[in-house]
Amino acid sequence: MATFQEIKGSCFCGANQFAITEPAVDTHHCHCSICRRLQGAAFVTLSIFPKSGFGWTKGGDLQRFSSSDQVHRNRCKNCGSPLTINLDALPDLVAISRACIDPAADTGHPDETLRHAFWPDRVPWLELNDNVRKAAGFDK
Ligand SMILES: [Zn+2]
Ligand SMILES: [Zn+2]
Image (cartoon, rainbow, N blue to C red; front, side):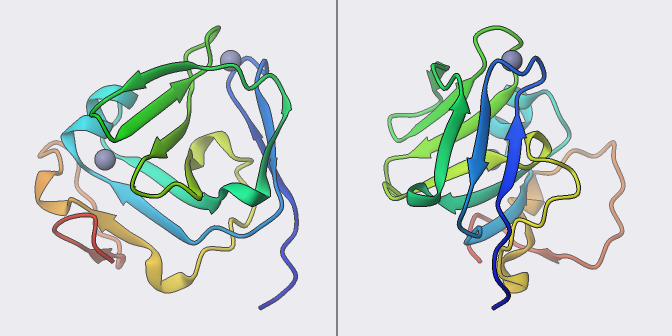
């Protein structure tokens, strides 16, 4: 694997900024109804990183909403950008909104992880014709 280049990201207003020093283990487009509603989007792209390589360089005191007992979604208290998701089932990992990471950054996820997750739940008002794999649930 090529040497991973540190990547950075932030919320819209810049109150919360982070840096990542280890590559993602997973990137997927989530079409589940929970992500769609909570992020106000047709689907949400999440990259999942080891917590050991993630750190706040500014801020980091976020508003937390638990969409279930196991899933905790964290937003900027000022601008509302959805930044991170903590999953109790994955205590060593953190999911990050891909759109809050610098657009040109290479998240370093293994190519085979990229997929449309919860594809059957997708909205009917957006047509997607890419060649990315479609998964019925979260499964790789
Ligand atoms: Zn903000
Ligand atoms: Zn989802």
